[in-house]
Length: 638
Image (tube, rainbow, N blue to C red):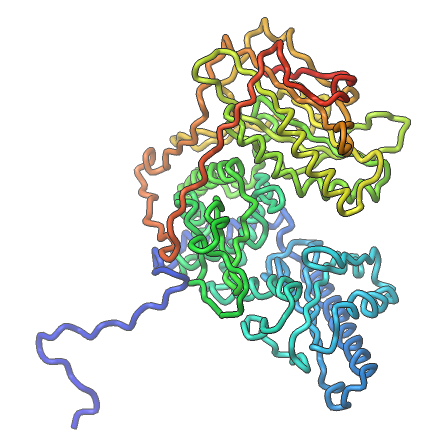
């Protein structure tokens, strides 16, 4: 008998074993890297080094030592709790307890001096109250610990501290286990049974991070690509979850999906493919790293078929661990528009790099935000003490996306682009102790179809935003007298009144030769020379100050911001975001069929509401009495 069967003459060869694929679809390409790809990756690494994205070995060992100390501290604390509760000695000896990391540290992409996101996992007999009392007290006794503070009422309760010079946030989760083994895998969904919602939220960061690492074909290629993309996003001012752009975990999931689609590619290829995939992605189709799974634990998950509110998410990127959530629910029409345009620019630049027409350094050149737009809203937050200012700025920043949303609803505002970077603002009174921070929002305006006169009253938009901030500050008992918000309109050439020259330095726009890219700007809006004399420039000292609303008269309402524009000499068509791919000019085919998530319905973006708040230049809407008593500035957009 023959040891192996033989194929009959002329029979087709046996089918090859199915190729393993990552994620929810087959890969786009299985091509192996070429020598040129490896050389481009080497150059990418050399370009990244001066930016400090790689941690030195000495600092890495110091970080590991700090985590070991914290881990030992947790074990000792849990042992003490166990003994105080008269548990059997056998349980006390094996009770365990562990510090897990998540975020950039766990992903292996943290930069020099980056903070550490940590999770303290305890057995069932250790309560959250123990964490915020006895463990907090134990931390207080450590000489390496500085700036210790507990935020017990946060959405995800946390202890913040600085341990030997490194900032650390420690969350807490109590599992329904008698002991915590050293080899505990937090990806196990059964661990979520019978947990309170705060523990589930605390576990989510670790579970998502670990799941991402298990869903990429090559962790080293993923990490290097993610380092490059995160640096690019920060340089281009689109790295901020709180302001409606993407945070670290969202960028990690986009890079992970790119790795799944090109499983054999090295970092230089993956960076280029990242821009290709997401400049062509058909939003709001979701980005998924794996098929969502139902675990029958009755936890809310992202599912637009069931949850109507999920249908309005504009750029959904879904976390891979149960319960699946959309990590980008803050994205707005404007922030998505800005990010897509940046993807297209990134594709054009990486194409130049591939053709040896540019170096990697070009990808990380910061665009000049303050030269990009003609009109800006400057938002100022001030408080009398440094401690109050820190809290106030955090609250105001967390709500800026509400203001952006309000501005987007105005039919004459095409785009409202907030710069994630905040700036110290000049003092209103040099003799008075005051701490001030400002944010800048670039505006793109469009001309009305049936008129040459454009008058935009933004009073309601700004007032509803400031009312929201004050209301939350008062509800949380954070508000103190002299905490203020002010808003003003400035034209591009007037920004020097508030911002230093080195911030406003104009940078040359680097556009790809042979690539036609329409950037998001309003350069088509010009102003006649004669009209320049009509502008009223509000100085910081004349900005109307705001305070909390009174329930009766609306006193101390936010500043009136009326922007009126005479466009009789202006050609101002609506800005269009069009992109001509490099293949149209270079003859190199860059277009590929990008697989979208098949398991989710395609959801149209919600219609843009038409909000008409147009007033003539001589008529103003009614305002609270306090505004009539205050010096008002009419901001003319010309």
